[in-house]
Image 1 (tube, rainbow, N blue to C red):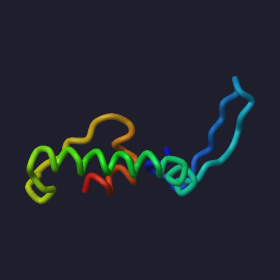
Image 2 (cartoon, rainbow, N blue to C red):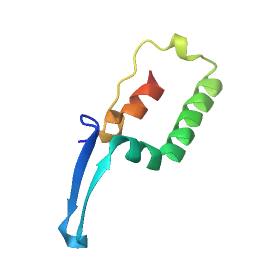
Image 3 (cartoon, helix red, strand yellow):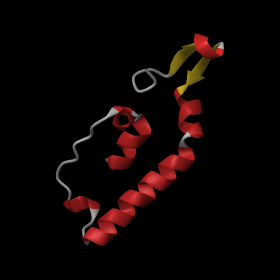
Length: 75
């Protein structure tokens, strides 16, 4: 939901949790992982001996590929 909207309501009755989370809050929570993700891409390109301008198409699959920060990194 945060991939499409600026905030989402999370309701987990099994844990008695109900809260609203903004996209900014979520992206702040995963920022450390996004740094590692970007570094992994850079390392992979370096090992392959190519630069990002040589890539014509990136096919994104799976739920995390919808996260706006992931999209920006891949672009």
